[in-house]
Length: 185
Image 1 (cartoon, helix red, strand yellow):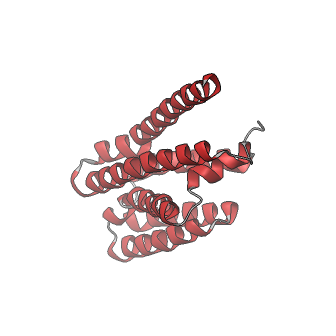
Image 2 (cartoon, helix red, strand yellow; image 1 turned 60 degrees about the vertical axis):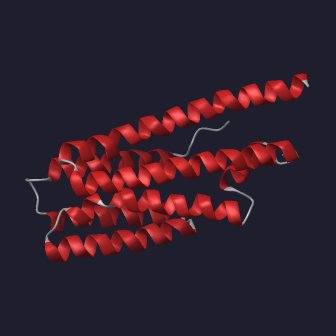
């Protein structure tokens, strides 16, 4: 397995740093100037990834940044993680209606001749991710609207990534067990 390109690592770090930058910028910079950070993050992601769903996220980010800039308001900046989670939710859910699912596409990168059992399994995993993304979109929105800046930054800058890592880890363990069971059958 080849390591991710440097640009992917940079974008990941920038995405992780966004909530922390907003948190530490609060009280030091006016929200309108921090809105420029949101525009930069969104445009950079679009330019580097060149994926259609990021175009939607960039459009939403530009709207949020415009509201933040014009109203000098912090809330639109805090809504960006909820927007991104919602975009991912729509992408994953749509792939359930119009297969192949997102998880099947990822699985086929490693195993192009995925058997029917593998396709069924990836569909179930996609459902799990849809459930997680419903939760995450709701939590990101709730923390933006009602939580303290510290709770917002903690959830959107750390806890959600720990939860995603746990989900990846548990799914990896389940997948190993399912494969082992299939081989022994």
